[in-house]
Image 1 (cartoon, rainbow, N blue to C red):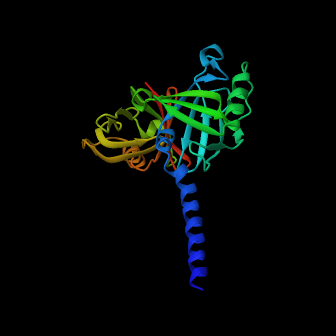
Image 2 (spheres, one colour; image 1 turned 180 degrees about the vertical axis):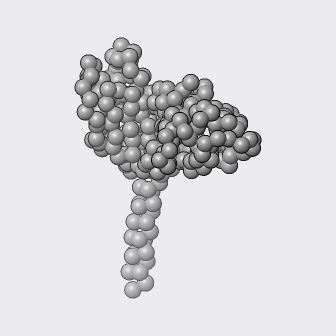
Image 3 (cartoon, rainbow, N blue to C red; image 1 turned 90 degrees about the vertical axis):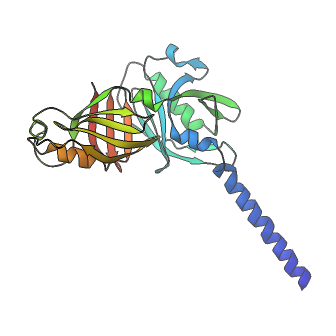
Length: 258
């Protein structure tokens, strides 16, 4: 009887260790935080440098809170789900959904979609991300520094909330925002008052606030709405000279690089 109990305990111990080990292979991969914490610019596809294939700048972004990915900057945008597999560095991208615009150079879109959906593992070295099918490299990306992507002054051209026309919300001019990621600060003009706030950015996740501003009386009701919305956003998306701030999956503010 005692021998049987010990045998059963041994079996459970092996099973437990096996399950735990399988979970940790992917879960302890130190590159996962790098993978999800950067926006990645395509530099090579199918062994060809991207500059020889297209003049477009394509990016791959992963949204860990939703286990989704997006490929942007091509003729079409591809969105889908991703999941990590038990093997170290193992990853799988679903086929996803692509927009259906027609462009002159559709070949790059097809090659990127094919590469992403065939990927079985990834590796990151010296800020270069490589997607593989088995041991065959499919595509290479370089990490995009958030500070260079956000450089410059951004001017608001859309905000959600209320039925008041945009120019009546901000009769003295459009609000602006500047990022200083080294100091983890943002600053700008809310319409007529200057403001500053703290900022934290991790991949596509963003947190701004609290906002501190000067206290001049301003015409229009837009400045209060602007400051309130700014402190609620939790996702950021930058595509060239357009920046969108999002709450959940709803785009609530859009800026143009000035």
